[in-house]
Amino acid sequence: MFDSLPDHFRSHGLSADIKTLLLVRKSFKRGLITTLGDLYLVLKGIVPTDPSQYGPFAVAFYDYFLDIEIKKGEKLEHAVARSASFKDWKSKKLGDDDRELDFNEITTLVDQFLDEVHLTSYDIQEILSGEAILKTDDPDRKDTAEQDDVSSDEDVTKAADYSKYSLQELKERMERVLEQQRRKHKGGDHWVGEEGRSPYGQRGAAIGGVRVGQQGGGKMARAVIGDRRFYPVDKKAKLSDDNIDVALTLLKGIEEESIEMRLDIPNTIKEGVKMGGLFLPIEREHKEKKTEVVLLIDNGGYSMTPYIEVVTRLFSKMKRRFTHDLQTYYFHNTIYGGAWSDERRTKYLKLDKILKLAKKKCVFVIGDADMGPYELSDSSMKDWQELKEHFRKMVWLNPTIERLWPMSDTIPIFRQIFPMFPLTPEGVEKAVQEMNKKFVKS
Image (cartoon, rainbow, N blue to C red; front, side):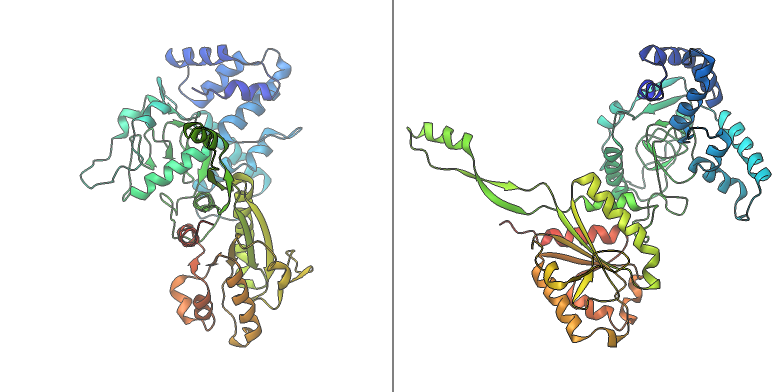
C-alpha cells in the first residue's frame, strides 16, 4: 500500500521508511483514516519531525496524491489553481460555463476543491495485491453478453495496489483488454470501466493505476488517458492529447530490419567439438534494436495547424521511450525538389540529400494531401515517386476525415502512390501493420 511513498517523501528531504507505511496501515485498520484529509493528518503526525518541515510535507503530499506541483515559494492556492486535478474538478463543477473568472471566484473555488478533496472517502479496510489479481486475470478474455457487470458494493472496503507495475505495462495490458471490450462495465477488477478494482478506469479503488476519463475517485491513479468523450478510448478519433498514449503504444509495433549475419561463436565451437575438431562457421541473424524513423510533415497550411504539435509530440515521445532514431522534415502542400529541416522552413534541403538516407528507415508523411490540382506538378509527382522507390517502408497519415477523401482532387492521386491511413490511433495501427508487411529479412 503506497509502497513508493517513503521514497517520495525522502526526495523532498523528509524522513520516511517502512515504519511509516506500517503506521499508516495500522491507522487504516483501526478506522482512523476514512478520507484523504484523515490520511493527511495521520502522515503529518508521522513524517515531519519539526514544524519547519510542514511546508515540504505539504508539497510532497499534494504532489503524490493529487499530482499538484507546488513550486518553491509558491502558495498552495496558486499551485492548486493551475493543476490538472483542479481544472478537471472545476470543469465538472461549472459545466459549460467557460467565462473568465476573477481572482475572488478562483480563490473560492480552490477552497471548495480542497474541502471536497480532503473529504474524499477512502473507507478502505484492506489492500489487495495487484500482482495477484493480474496473475489470475486473462487480458484477452472475451466480453460476452452473458457476463453480468460486477456490483461495486463488494469493492467499497477493498483496494488493489498496482504501483509495482510500470505505466507502460499497464497501458499495454489495457490495450489488450480494450480489444475485447464491447460494452460499458461497472465494478470488478478486469474491464476498463467505473468503480471496482480494475487498474484502468475511473472512480475505482486502484492504487497506482491508469485513469480513463476526467472524473476521478480516490485520487489514486498515476496517469490519465482521455476524457468523457472517449470511453474507454476511441481509437477512431483524431489524434489528440487524449489518445496520444494509445497511438504511442501502437507505434512500438514497428518491426526492425535484419541488418547482418554474425558468427555464432558458442555454437560453432560446440558443433565443432561434436564433429571431432571440424569447425564450420555457424552464423546467426543479428537484428538491430533501433528503428529509424523519418517524418515528413506538411506544416504550411491552416488546415494542418491543429495537428503539428500533437504529431511532433507523439514521435518525440516515441524517440525517448523506445530508443528510436528520428529525423523530421517539413514541406508545404507537396514536395518541390526538397524539404526543410526546421519548422519555420528556412533551412532548405535538396531531395538528393534526403534520398541519401538509409533505405531501411520508416517514413511517415503527415499531411491532408488536399490542394489545387495545379500545385501538384509532374516534377512534384516525380519527387514523391523517387521517395517511395527509395524507402522500403513509407506510409501517409491524413487528418482529413476519411469519407471526404474521394471528394478531393489530389488525395486520390496520392493514394495511388502511398498507402494512406487516417491520423487516428487506429490509422497508426494500420500504418504499422502495412510497414510490417514490407518487412523482408535481408
